[in-house]
Image (tube, rainbow, N blue to C red; front, side, top):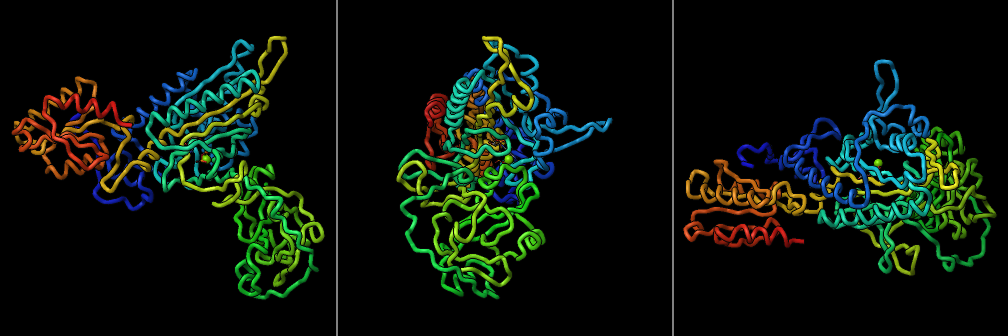
Length: 569
Ligand code: ATP
Ligand code: MG
């Protein structure tokens, strides 16, 4: 490819709408352009990267026994109504109608389609297991499309679905995918970590996420400093240490006037009661029903845990009016004593004695409140967000945290969809049984962004070799000089003949401009043909990830390049 003919519209300035490095660099280096919020065009350089990621994913899926198909993007509402998700999927689903006013969705995921398909055409135990996948655009009307390709509304996903005879079969399929995913991220040369995950709206029980480590990752991962435990903070289990429960005697409950105290900090300031000796009461509407979540004063709620514990579809923070009507007091004076709605109490609070909280009466608080004597919760559950320093749920170690980008997610679905969509087979004894399913996603376009997020410097992108859009760029310092151009062209042809993806910067630009562009777009190797070295029949070879330049005799360039390309980890 000649740089003079390549469509890579680079930008000098950092686009103002781009907050994270990957978004900035992909725009600046001419890889992507926005069409509308969360919807992008992949320009030639980006699409080369995308195709390489897809190929690695495809090879590993095939190797694990997957079979590639292409399912429709347009999905009829009936299938989603059958699975019960037409209503629960909510506003994230792009919906449309045809000319007959029939409802459709643009596929956010494909459990409904694939399960219906397999059910129609696989009937016997002999037809299973099946591992079926596709690589395709997905559509999700994300509430906050942001960070460029990281959270798009149209994005490329690989989704595989497994169908097995029983749980033991599912374990095998899940394990195959777990291994395949590890191979994929190793082959992509990305630093990643596998963590335990919440299974979210898709449902199911066991689930792991594959996280590319990056400072600005949206996800927080906690991991144990002693054992192998690692989890998305959304999922991380918080335990209590039985021995930490004090044997403090219960004191008499006391009501105090707090005319100006609304927050936990206000109570700390006015009465010197530390936040660890207070509880906070957060009000939520769970499928429209008001509930109270009660936590230690210095803790944050993990909404995902609360949602899972409630088993509800929609969970929103309650508004002032619902709270006033339901509790008889406003935010800032709420507490578990005399609470009129169901209380979900964080596990940790069950160990607290003589704590302070709102009195469900404006301008009043209680002191010396105790579980059991003063209030009875609906449930005592783990609903707080894990934090650094927490006890590891598996060993005596403690939790640390890093940030990551979720690029892959695997779930054991069990019979959730086969039951709803009636996907059965006839077993060896002639009996009907439900198929046991798993689903396994990889965000292909998000993986490209994650690769940039992890591999860049002040000059631009540093593509990992296996997914670089081109492997080598040949730069004649002065394209008008015939000797330089001849040598450059000769090397370029030779690289191509040797199966190396090369680009030649034949543009009539200053050398500085060409070097800047080569760095910005992140080509791993640069071969510079300049006047001085050429006198000795030499050229410069520079690795994008190192500062040093190596002088190499023209006739040795191919073998040097081959060694570097073959040898870098
Ligand atoms: P998230 O928690 O980030 O919203 P998810 O749990 O909704 O992700 P899955 O339904 O498991 O995601 O989708 C599989 C993969 O698709 C994810 O691991 C991620 O890499 C990718 N993905 C999901 N949503 C988006 C999006 N809006 N833009 C780009 N990639 C996405
Ligand atoms: Mg999502």
